[in-house]
Image (cartoon, rainbow, N blue to C red; front, top):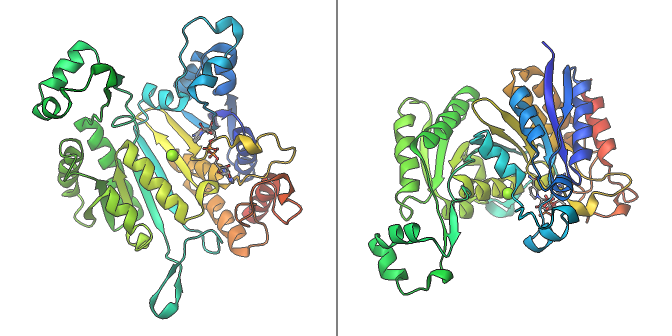
Length: 395
Ligand code: NAI
Ligand code: MG
């Protein structure tokens, strides 16, 4: 059956990495129709809506999407850049990514961080007797994508009913009763049991299917007792169904300290929205950083696959794009896995492995160059050359 995939290039380098990714998908023999959908800053400026309804409709209809990246700008610029005819309409900018995740309840975010052998950006550490070790990092972070600190339930100068509810808590009353209300900012961290169960189940099933020996719940239940506590409580229950997988529990702060000490010991990691964002960026840094960090946002019906990086506006207008397309290509591999085209995903990953191991073609980030127009003269491969190398290695 021929698939239809929604493509959302977005802003900046999003379009360049997406175009290259489609070439790889074609070369591997993935047959699909692609339907373009609008998203990002351009549509905020023109229409006052960075996630137009027509894009929501396409996602609703086709369920599967590849997404490049968008640009968000600080508050003062959001209004200034809006089309003059829309300036006095009281429009407020919101992140189209967060909105998309919440609209379709894309609550399971997966961020694999696997070191490719031969990647000069891989983390190395000092071993015994002055040896140098390169730990084989292979971690998949499952991040709850819709709730917690990014849930958007927040106030400055909270309204009466919220304030009264807060005052009913003895700790709030003791510590904040004297603070003027206009000087109070409150961001909530709400977890629901069902969402906890969904992220935990997705993580355990994945660990089971791909043979990971441990699942780590990375939170802070000793301090954030209610929310982190709920995730841990549900995690302990679900882990009983998987006797062959060890359940580990770490605190986010300690986890970041251990990040460089023993990253190879971890397998699947589960965390809430904000801590998951932190811990996944931490692990991504060990395996090459933003040029390699892929992700999936998976809901019950709709799934969107995107690199972790943003629109890198500095490099957006280069005549020959220099950014590394691998993060986007690896995100497309996650799409292939998701829709049961695993064999094609395996072939693409093998091709990337080959290109990295051979070491002949390297993008500017892999050469540790500062991004600028002259990196090509210094021996870096362009986005297109890197893609060509991956396509050649497919065959
Ligand atoms: P960014 O990820 O766009 O770029 C940061 C730096 O990482 C770049 O200057 C570049 O050196 C490097 N980089 C990024 N992608 C790369 C690639 N494929 N290959 C090689 N190097 C790469 O983050 P930044 O500069 O903080 O934000 C730029 C814009 O992107 C902002 O407007 C921000 O709001 C937005 N953003 C969007 C995201 C998304 O669409 N998911 C995520 C993060 C930021
Ligand atoms: Mg991030």
